[in-house]
Length: 123
Image (cartoon, rainbow, N blue to C red; front, top):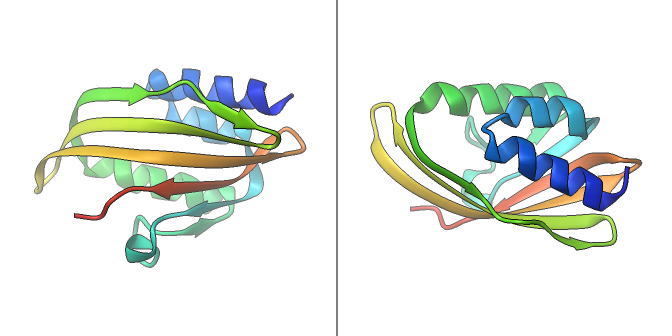
Protein backbone atom coordinates (compact mmCIF):
# COMPACT_ATOMS: atom_id res chain seq x y z
CA UNK A 1 0.00 0.00 0.00
CA UNK A 2 1.36 3.42 -0.89
CA UNK A 3 1.27 6.36 1.51
CA UNK A 4 -1.51 7.83 -0.63
CA UNK A 5 -3.56 4.64 -0.29
CA UNK A 6 -3.11 4.60 3.50
CA UNK A 7 -3.92 8.32 3.70
CA UNK A 8 -7.07 8.07 1.62
CA UNK A 9 -8.30 5.03 3.55
CA UNK A 10 -7.71 6.81 6.87
CA UNK A 11 -9.63 9.87 5.65
CA UNK A 12 -12.54 7.72 4.42
CA UNK A 13 -12.83 5.83 7.72
CA UNK A 14 -12.46 8.97 9.87
CA UNK A 15 -15.12 10.81 7.86
CA UNK A 16 -17.43 7.89 8.68
CA UNK A 17 -16.50 8.12 12.37
CA UNK A 18 -14.77 4.73 12.22
CA UNK A 19 -11.63 5.75 14.12
CA UNK A 20 -11.03 2.41 15.84
CA UNK A 21 -11.47 0.52 12.56
CA UNK A 22 -8.90 2.85 10.98
CA UNK A 23 -6.43 2.21 13.79
CA UNK A 24 -6.87 -1.57 13.73
CA UNK A 25 -6.52 -1.71 9.95
CA UNK A 26 -3.86 0.91 9.25
CA UNK A 27 -1.61 1.22 12.31
CA UNK A 28 1.54 -0.76 13.10
CA UNK A 29 1.48 -2.73 16.36
CA UNK A 30 4.26 -0.48 17.72
CA UNK A 31 2.80 2.83 16.47
CA UNK A 32 3.27 5.99 18.54
CA UNK A 33 0.72 8.75 19.20
CA UNK A 34 2.06 12.20 20.12
CA UNK A 35 0.02 15.05 21.60
CA UNK A 36 1.08 18.68 22.18
CA UNK A 37 3.50 19.08 25.08
CA UNK A 38 0.80 20.47 27.41
CA UNK A 39 -1.27 17.31 26.97
CA UNK A 40 1.49 14.69 26.70
CA UNK A 41 1.19 13.21 30.19
CA UNK A 42 -2.58 13.21 30.71
CA UNK A 43 -5.02 10.34 30.14
CA UNK A 44 -5.43 11.46 26.52
CA UNK A 45 -1.68 12.07 26.18
CA UNK A 46 1.10 10.32 24.34
CA UNK A 47 0.69 6.59 23.74
CA UNK A 48 3.04 3.82 22.57
CA UNK A 49 1.72 0.72 20.88
CA UNK A 50 -1.56 -0.01 19.16
CA UNK A 51 -3.16 -1.32 22.36
CA UNK A 52 -2.46 1.97 24.16
CA UNK A 53 -3.65 4.01 21.17
CA UNK A 54 -6.91 2.04 21.05
CA UNK A 55 -7.40 2.59 24.80
CA UNK A 56 -6.80 6.33 24.36
CA UNK A 57 -9.47 6.32 21.65
CA UNK A 58 -11.91 4.47 23.91
CA UNK A 59 -11.37 7.05 26.67
CA UNK A 60 -12.02 9.89 24.25
CA UNK A 61 -15.18 8.26 22.88
CA UNK A 62 -16.43 7.69 26.45
CA UNK A 63 -16.01 11.44 27.09
CA UNK A 64 -18.15 12.39 24.08
CA UNK A 65 -21.85 12.90 24.67
CA UNK A 66 -22.85 13.99 21.15
CA UNK A 67 -21.06 14.79 17.88
CA UNK A 68 -22.43 17.79 16.01
CA UNK A 69 -19.83 17.96 13.23
CA UNK A 70 -16.98 15.70 12.10
CA UNK A 71 -14.90 17.03 9.18
CA UNK A 72 -11.65 15.64 7.79
CA UNK A 73 -9.78 17.36 4.96
CA UNK A 74 -8.25 15.64 1.98
CA UNK A 75 -4.70 14.50 2.76
CA UNK A 76 -1.53 16.35 1.82
CA UNK A 77 1.11 13.74 0.98
CA UNK A 78 4.93 13.92 0.86
CA UNK A 79 6.86 10.65 0.52
CA UNK A 80 6.10 8.60 3.66
CA UNK A 81 4.23 11.42 5.40
CA UNK A 82 0.75 12.89 5.15
CA UNK A 83 -1.33 15.40 7.02
CA UNK A 84 -5.00 16.22 7.38
CA UNK A 85 -6.98 18.93 9.13
CA UNK A 86 -9.69 17.64 11.45
CA UNK A 87 -12.64 19.54 12.90
CA UNK A 88 -14.81 17.99 15.59
CA UNK A 89 -17.69 19.89 17.17
CA UNK A 90 -18.93 17.81 20.08
CA UNK A 91 -20.67 18.01 23.42
CA UNK A 92 -18.35 16.52 26.03
CA UNK A 93 -19.71 14.86 29.16
CA UNK A 94 -19.46 17.28 32.07
CA UNK A 95 -17.70 19.95 29.98
CA UNK A 96 -20.28 21.13 27.48
CA UNK A 97 -19.77 21.84 23.83
CA UNK A 98 -16.23 21.95 22.40
CA UNK A 99 -15.15 23.05 18.92
CA UNK A 100 -11.89 21.18 18.28
CA UNK A 101 -9.64 21.80 15.28
CA UNK A 102 -6.26 20.22 14.71
CA UNK A 103 -3.61 19.32 12.18
CA UNK A 104 -2.78 15.63 12.22
CA UNK A 105 0.52 14.39 10.79
CA UNK A 106 1.13 10.71 10.04
CA UNK A 107 4.26 8.75 9.16
CA UNK A 108 3.86 5.60 7.06
CA UNK A 109 6.45 2.79 6.87
CA UNK A 110 5.95 -0.69 5.41
CA UNK A 111 2.32 0.14 4.53
CA UNK A 112 1.36 1.00 8.13
CA UNK A 113 1.07 4.18 10.17
CA UNK A 114 3.97 4.16 12.64
CA UNK A 115 3.39 7.61 14.13
CA UNK A 116 0.60 10.11 14.48
CA UNK A 117 1.16 13.58 15.88
CA UNK A 118 -1.49 16.17 16.67
CA UNK A 119 -1.12 19.94 16.61
CA UNK A 120 -3.76 22.12 18.25
CA UNK A 121 -4.09 24.99 20.70
CA UNK A 122 -4.77 23.92 24.26
CA UNK A 123 -7.45 26.14 25.84
